[in-house]
Length: 393
Image 1 (tube, helix red, strand yellow):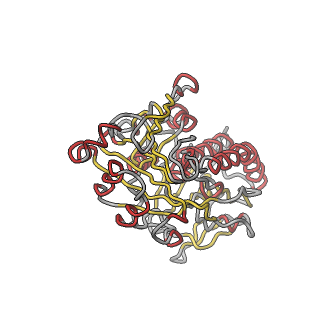
Image 2: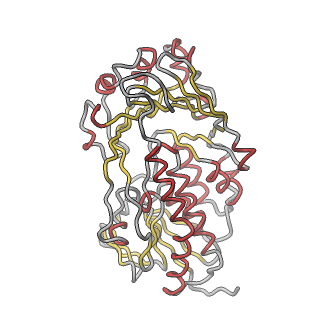
Image 3: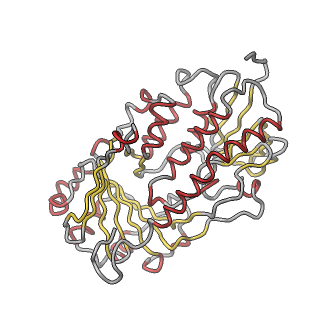
């Protein structure tokens, strides 16, 4: 197909995992891509993240990012282990995803994965096509979906043939697509995030390490009293990440005040909330240099993800609870779908073409993403019999 001197211009709003993977998927000859990130620094917080086999197959095989990810200190998850509060292993589920699905469930420190994806975006060798520009301190305050124009807080206008809304669960662009659409609603759960050096646990918390090896490549869970701890290693075993899920009614601090991933939790309140857990577990909390806290919210499925030249992906389109570990993986599937449907577009597409391709992308993704949203809610149900310690997961 012949190309013209006018590039296909793509504007991506949001520089997180969804936005970066959209840039990777949409790169190509005669394309100009700009990623707009509202924060001053385009970086991720310190937390663990997993990509499921559906997503790792895309990043390693479809996009060929093995080189960029080779230094990201990823760990292949070998299975799930569920423990009682006495430290007894009550269930173990080995992961055979490599055999069954041709890819593995992989664990990362979120910052390491984000940095690797950013390297891929900025690398001229990733795929054929022009370089991508990432602009920080670029908060989008308005969007004209028909004209393909976003307006920054500074007043600057940026035009694109298509605009990809990857601006997260509190998306401003969602309101442009669905004017009366749902806002993120509390799900009744909040989560603390902790990150502890494994060598500190091995030195200071031997009782914990006798029961749960912080370097072993497994996701471990301890459940009781409507609360649960989801734990696992990162950075080749050097750090141990913890997500502590708590029903809002058991919180000892205001969950409604924690709408950011970087909201600070308090150690004394965390200890009070988990006071019914044994000390061999709760004593490890004090070793986390930082404690994050946020209220878990999701949205009802939208009736559409696109309007005019604007298309939503990731949490902006289908925010879901982290209980299935599919949030980032579904964003990657969104990006792959966009890349596939727009693969043959070598020049600025007409609005008619865009409408058709957006509709095809939406139809290919909607049922699956909505189903996983529902599964993620179901998985948030209590893991024990009420008022008992019996694990029913």
